[in-house]
Length: 148
Image 1: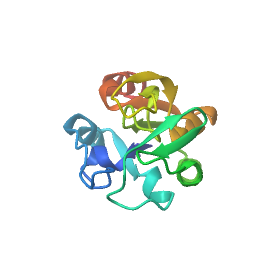
Image 2 (image 1 turned 120 degrees about the horizontal axis):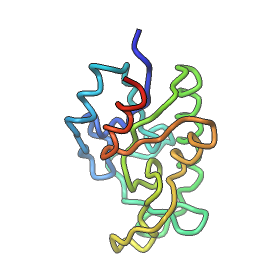
Image 3 (image 1 turned 30 degrees about the horizontal axis):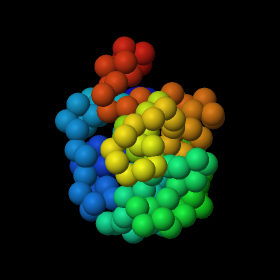
């Protein structure tokens, strides 16, 4: 039986990205050979529409480009994702880098200028605090080294 891992649905080609498109990544999709992939989209789980305005973290809150506070929606999505992780007993997640939900280590700085800063998205941070290992789409090889 394969280990179950969470994966950002946009990386699997699902059109749930803020723009209505996806971030399809063949290296991530190829993980299905080794793992049972469980797609998640915290923003969608939090009740946000597809498409939607881009959002970034500023301070302790998440704001849309036009300044709407979306923190509650992002927190709801994070909690729902954690529930799935616990329900499915997933030890790891492959999440979209730099996202205000899924980014881990580096996220956009809240100015909508493309500037990165140190930090974690709300979902990635919650999962990490609950002992789930977080990998970005560019660190798939590290995941494979640890679990295969």
